[in-house]
Length: 215
Image (cartoon, rainbow, N blue to C red; front, side, top):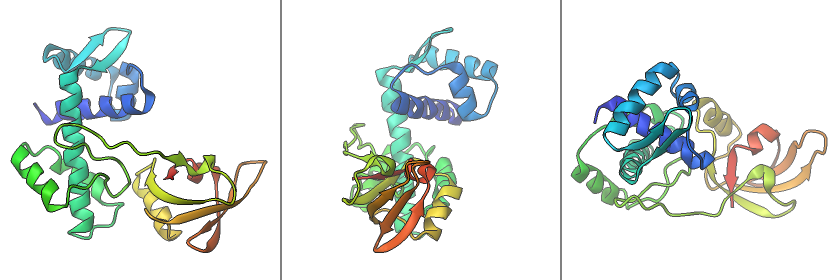
């Protein structure tokens, strides 16, 4: 497979993981910042390889073969992110772009050895699950911070938005995976939260709260 084909598979996988439905050509084009016509051409190639089921005007779904390959790409990406943060001490807001390049390494033996070297992690530095070598993903019960009850303690286990800007914002607020939250007040007008984070009281907007996973 080409790098481009792998990127399309991964994009379709991510969209279907969040929506649970067939993926439209326009949704793929928007996510990949390209023209719908270019997407259509690639979808035909992926369909010919039996990696997707594609019907014009109806959308796209991954075949079992396509889903497994997509999970293996995601697995490589997230393992490399763990390596970059834990072993090379990169900040968590810098590793995504580097892992985008490393995820295309073909050696299955290398990736399995990397997995063992890292202690077989189940989550990447942003809290996203890492598929194992069979494509199985450990399920976790998680809520958005915006959904939690008042005066109960929760722990940050992931981020919905892994953009560099958002992660840098969290660093400024001294919020990271493992941080504890207790929501003390919720503003009725705009759902702004007054939160105790690691024993500090901070105000968190609804936009931020909708991008933090806790349990």
